[in-house]
Length: 115
Image (cartoon, rainbow, N blue to C red; front, side, top):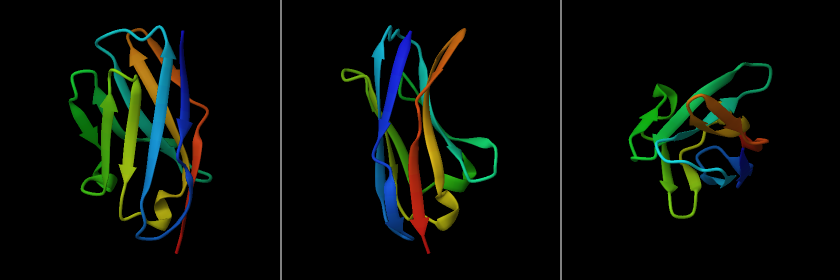
């Protein structure tokens, strides 16, 4: 089992920045992938970014150049630096941990970007 706890959400004006954190605990194994999903109000959850334990990253087109994903393997913690935030970035951000065949999710953290 893996437990994930997100933090760092909040209310920010458009153009502002936030840094989300996701702390993992439990049976953390090598060769895993962690990442963030975004669920806007009334919409499906969408992938934002991923980072492997080898630090290979992926970004959705909508956040490229604005968001940066990183992780500290020694601390089992992942981060999402969000810059130049837009109102459409509003929603709940969920972190996940995946290592075949299991996936685990955090409880989510709310991000609200005011225009």
